[in-house]
Picture 1 (cartoon, rainbow, N blue to C red):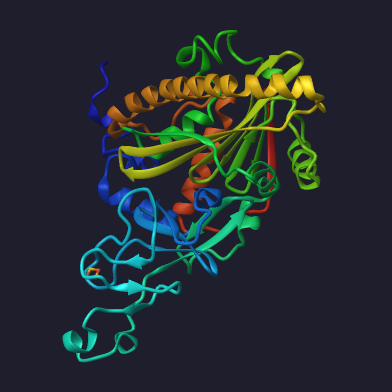
Picture 2 (cartoon, rainbow, N blue to C red; picture 1 turned 120 degrees about the vertical axis):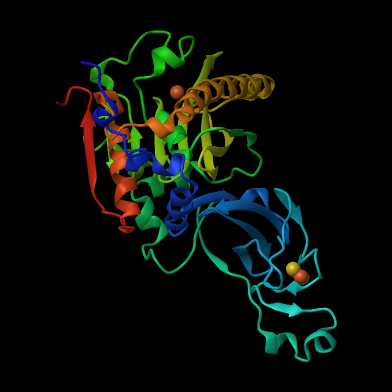
Length: 398
Ligand code: FES
Ligand SMILES: [Fe+2]
């Protein structure tokens, strides 16, 4: 007998985990909730000068982060007067003056310069007391995280757990990363899920990751910490903590590929580009996923070379200096290609996201997709505080 509509597990519409991928109201609700958890926004080294700013998206809202004399602060990118965007574009420099009627804000987000204020309103700016909505900020190394205040209370370090040590080691001193950015026609979770999936490599990356076939089960070691997770090939219970401890001491350099996914939208990978003339060229890659709409995400990738393990004399230093620009270029070309392959797969998933069933059939090498979706459901149910737990999974586990 052919299955009729009543047999379909999504006959009543997309499954709950996929609803925000196609339904604008569900997407808005998802983003409203996610705006209250620590979310990666950008890099402090990219706004080094007084009044430098960049815009970002948090909880589906445009915000801007700016360097004031008192330090970095962030506000919703919306004038209190008639709701014009205060910052237009991705980055810039200048005091906070609205382009619509020239209201001017101070570092505390208060409108203290209002043209013809007494004439127009019969009151002073202090009496009007208009303010911008402030975003709470915290830094881990150069990496800036933000959240709208009031709902989540943990510190950034508590939220990141052992990942805080990893991020502060590799997220420090990244003033001028190589970067590329594009918009992908897929919901942000599809991009996150594909990076958590080690089973797709043969089908989607046949000339790179998947060239040698599927990953052998005995090297698979996954760690789940709070709402985040890592793939640490060849690891065992305790590897994540050992990596974090070495990062804390400032001595850690990777010997194998490592990837960490931080909820909701930051992916950090330590990748060896190549061995050349006795040196290993390693890079750290940060992929930042910014949700724009139910089926649209901005993906920005920054890459930075890691220090070398061995000391170098004059000759080796010269070889490295000559080689590095080519390594950076080659690494970037590869990263663009591999992201492109993943993005294309995500765009296909997005096309029929409204048909997503209730339960995918996850393999052992997709264990982290299961963790991620369980965490997503927990957050959507209002449980925003970190669990403080670490669990692990090996490719040989049942
Ligand atoms: S909307 Fe900003 S000054 Fe009028
Ligand atoms: Fe991939």
